[in-house]
Image (cartoon, rainbow, N blue to C red):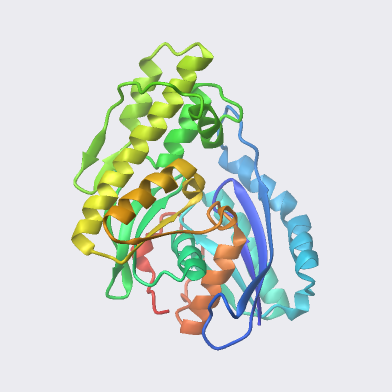
Length: 332
């Protein structure tokens, strides 16, 4: 069985082909044959929904062709099309949905709508073999802490305003870094020497990041060293908040594993901080390879495969911009 995955929730267009041989999907019988990513470049103006959608529509065909070529797959060999149903930017979701639905109808194969947030978690669980983890999900648009409870993910804590990725992207643009996003902040933070006083907002197991951004805007940050200190401070403060909330939650749930996933899970400093906390609490720390943490289509294909095998494909395949992670039944 071969499944095509399509990712198009925000700035990234992705197409992936996976191959499955067996009854129950696991890393031993499932191979990622291709995982092609085309990302809209970061700019100082941020991400404009219409421009993102145009980017995805324009590049879909060559990205699809590249994914099929790399996987040595003919379109007629595909058994299902999985696509990111939401949450995400409406324009981008619609572009992916049209492409996925068209392929599904043309090939006469099932269309599998996948919850993007669930896919971030499941691809990490899949490749790390985590069974019952506490999940720290850190993406551009959201940040949450949750765990499985009675067949669904229960959210114990989450951002009260913006996601940590959104914060770091804003800091990158505010300081006019290169690139002007979270990646630029990571690079500049490595040159930071001192911590600046920034708001630290943790409420139970939830947190808020916008106060830090407001505080940074009020600072007169001009020199390269001042900007480096600001990046270091924003990163350390935000990550400390996440780790504190996660540790409080872990002491309550006592999950045997901690999974870090989402685009910002690629940050080595955040990995280090959560790994140390997990070790102190007697939990195994799990994080997937960078390729599967940023937005990508392999995570959509893998989750779509699991949904197919568990017979939990939603009847409503239309894009859902504000879909929550709690809405997905986890039966695999």
